[in-house]
Length: 307
Image (tube, rainbow, N blue to C red; front, top):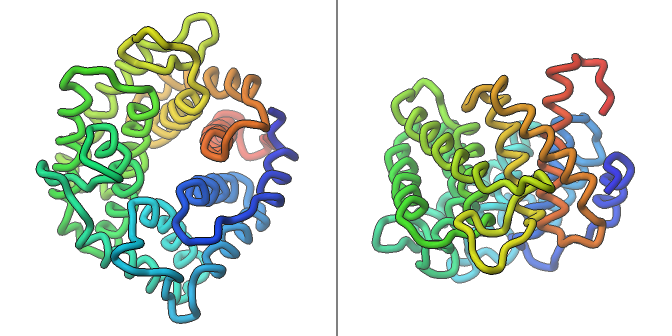
């Protein structure tokens, strides 16, 4: 897939779903935010703002809001409300993320205390972690006085037990766990060092496991990190792991000199393999990875790097 023009056309032609909080819309919104941060292109900002304004009233109410309709996907898409509020200072966006947070306070949890997605199976708990925790941490860090940090860290500790407790885990669930860690740490106060270090150690431990299952021939990721009879290359998993490695290098979670070459290589191989016919989730994961690739290139080559 050629990057530049393709990405512009992709968002130009993208059509939102009819209801707020669709998972694929959330993926597209986060990918557009990533590209806006890299390029400053106002077209990506407009894509995000148009989505929010489609589903928000002028008072910040979310169309279709109810406890029954609320889901982890609502939280996932709701991450853009923080971005819009920081950028525009419009009160309706603050009211929108406050509304999402109020719903989250009463959201379903499993017996171990973690939020759930559609059920309480391990994979579903991990899906909820990916969709919810970055929003939860950003709210607590900026608006919640860090009072719920113990709850957030505890949910990651429970997830770590799931990941290290044996059984087969798909690359999808494993890399989403890593992405949840990286994005949550990005919204966390590093001054709470003991808790920050816990998440950092979890990330490092799981990254080693994932990279140990990298396909030697293609340089991309296998579908099942624990082996299995039906394995093969996973494009989504490859995109997310490329994103995670490069973001973690840029944040200092892992050593840049040790891992940045691996992350850059994965993204380069990914962009050569991915096809425009892939699903929205896969395309947006690739865009997220490519955004981190461009940011890393800028840091290495300087501000004149054009992408």
